[in-house]
Image 1 (cartoon, rainbow, N blue to C red):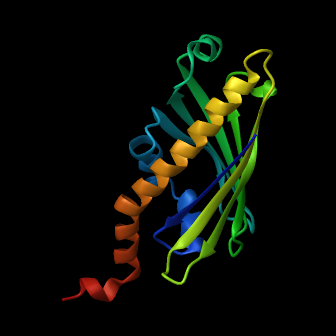
Image 2 (cartoon, rainbow, N blue to C red; image 1 turned 120 degrees about the vertical axis):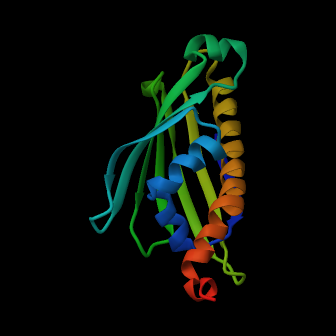
Length: 176
């Protein structure tokens, strides 16, 4: 199953990607913005030409009872992002702590600058879950979660982070 979402973030494309690797702003995006129960950085490399990170977040499962019985009430998810500064596309992989060998969730985030000074981010993610009798239900649940989380992220980013980023990039505004 393919999930595709497109939304405008109030920043340029390079700032959007850099903020994915900014853990001071990323933690509240995940916990306050999306509602993750916890967030932590597992690995990070922003000194190489290609930036990579692995983060982990714990989430409440919002799924039908048979899925919760199989997965539990919460799930620990590892996210891996790979991006080269200057490019407009990052590769993203999600690995749940439960049923990881039967689950494949990966895709891209593409950010294009708009004339307004925002960037239009497109998330295209493939969700494959191979579990007898529940796979298609789990895929639909995961796809819906990805879409809802993308909506929550853009809302939090635009309402909370974007105003701060604009102030930081316009220092003469702060001088009276």
